Every structure is written in structure tokens, then in C-alpha cells.
Image (cartoon, rainbow, N blue to C red; front, side, top):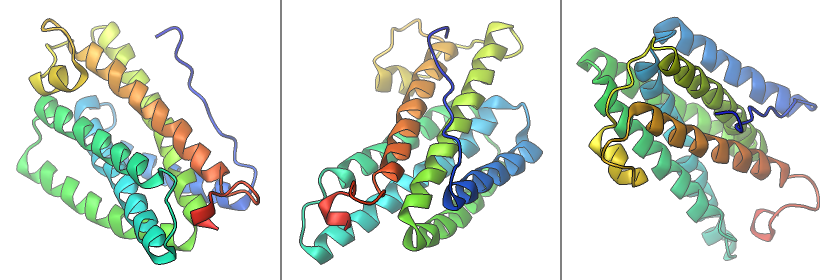
Length: 211
């Protein structure tokens, strides 16, 4: 954990401030329901996190078709991000084993965020990617707290689920801590990539199909 860095893109424009506020509202809402229940908190996190990549991938796919221009790799990368976040959800469903009521909350949260994020992407794709960048920053913080709780024995370091060992090609004796480290690494990559996508909307730095 010593070489992992919790990075933060400081908001310096109105759109970025809005994106950061949206993230903080989501964080506050999540804390009300789950607080320090890290595994169940992760289920909600990953349910929401799996939405943006699919939404952005769809809109960029349709835009590339409409303009008859190459997407320059955006669609594949965004869909890969969505798939990665979906696998995180599958892993934590195995760990947390949510009740049917909690699964219902997950579905409602996913549906609400799907609508809100789709509208946001239509209004401002740049702000939408910045939201995801900030969201992934918070995910990195959350998983760092999760790791700290495992290390101080507040959370039991149970054996890693089979689905996680298969997905990350982990050893048979892998533990939950090994899985959380891998997932946090994924979230850091999504954080940096989405901030990068948002930065690419600066004038003169936008991919041809987005102009």
C-alpha cells in the first residue's frame, strides 16, 4: 500500500465544481445507508460505477455512427471500463451476500443514476467524465479505508471468492485483501482515464469524432 497515491483533481472551473458537488452528494447519501459496512458499501459503489462506461460508450458509439467517423478507441475503452466495474459488483455480491431488500435498493439506485448520468452526458460529456473521475477518487479512498480495516483486523480477511481468483488470476490461497488491492488499482486507472477524457474536451485537444 505504501506506493499507492490518492490523487485529487482540484476543481478550477464551474463545470468541475458542479461535478465535484455531485460526487460529494452521492458520497453523503451512501454514508447514510452503509457507513462503515465496507463490503455492502462496495456493492452500491460498483452498481453505480458500472453505469457511466456503458452510457458513455453508447453515446460515443451512436455519435461515431451518426458522423460516420472512427471513434478512436473510445467506445471499446469505455465498454471495458463498464465490464470491469460489473465484475467488481459480481465479486462483492459474493462477499457481502445482500438481502433482497438491499438488492432492491441497488436496482433503484442504478436506475436513478442511469437516468441522471445519461442526461448529464447529453448536456455536458466533459462534466460527466469529470464526475466519474471524482467518483473514482472517492472509490480509491473507500478501498484504502477497507484495506486499513482489514489490516487492523476490524474486517476479517476471508478467503477470496472464486470469481475474483479467476478474474484476477490470483493464487488459490488469495485473501480478500488481495482482491481489494486489485480492485483499488482498477479504480485508480478509471480515475486517471476519466479525468483524461474530461481534459481532452479542452479546445484543440478533442478527438476528431468528438468535434
